[in-house]
Image (cartoon, rainbow over all chains, first blue to last red; front, side, top):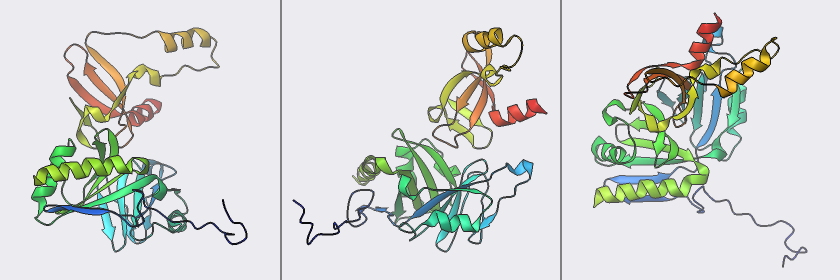
Length: 197
Length: 93
């Protein structure tokens, strides 16, 4: 029973997408998998297509990248998600109103908060591109050789839709639906563990 | 089966969902004289060719674009793909 006299405010404990109080991280041989709980996300789309005269703005000093590309500068990043549409990322801005910050950078565009809809997992390889590309070969039907640093794509991974961002030769980010965080972690960790075996 | 996406290159057809005949893009004018007959045809009647067919595919697990894919229904060979928005804009011009 709640004691209203002493517990005027319920103690709320923030949890990550995987339900922990701290972000999960685990290593499998050369590959390490970590939940990026601090990533702020917001989508940006042009109100009119580029052909009709609206130019893609610069946000946080970032030029918005072309088809299938991702850019990053400091804590901010942007990746292409569709025609005249991008997702903007901000490291360490998962708990602030990042969409409002983006809207003030690009007032003429449609901006939607996405942090609460997605979960981000960062995969790093301690042994170059090899283990990362082996993991991709197990999980997604993409040509790893045509998916170099700075490339981004959305694809299906065990029937879940995910964004894959090749942040560097040895680093890959997987951004998927937040409600499927547990299943996505399972898919990634099982594949990584089997590579290790 | 791979679909040649006009922006993204060859993509696994499992990323797409299929809607049907690309003629669905040509919705009749509801204010026209013969609207009832035109809508009856639009909603219920489809050509079912054995051979080259233009159809709508949605890149659901991708960039969420609609494509008009030209496919041979007898061989499943995909002869081309265009963005449906381009097809629509092209038709309007």
